[in-house]
Amino acid sequence: MSNDTNDVIFIGKKPLMTYVNSAIIQLSSIPEITLKARGYTMGLAIDVSQVILRKTKIFEIGTIKVSSEQLVSADGRKRDVSTIEIPIKRIS
Image (cartoon, rainbow, N blue to C red; front, top):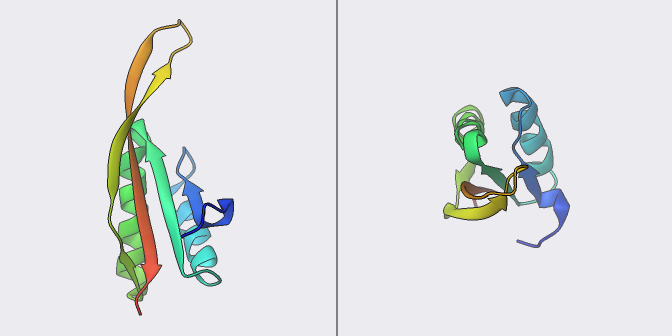
């Protein structure tokens, strides 16, 4: 997978189906995308991937990457935030 921004969906605070629709639209034109999330939105990224898999039956999940990033908060303190990357690709 390339590092093109068209193949990455960053999960935030929008409704679940917004991300599902966006992912399915992108998967219709490219073979693989990656859902990326951090912190509290990681659960939403997992939900998006499961809805895509259960509703379409033509995609599969690749190797999931879980890690953490060190961020500096507004008050200057450093904190670790968990991250997840979920690749979804068309079944060949």
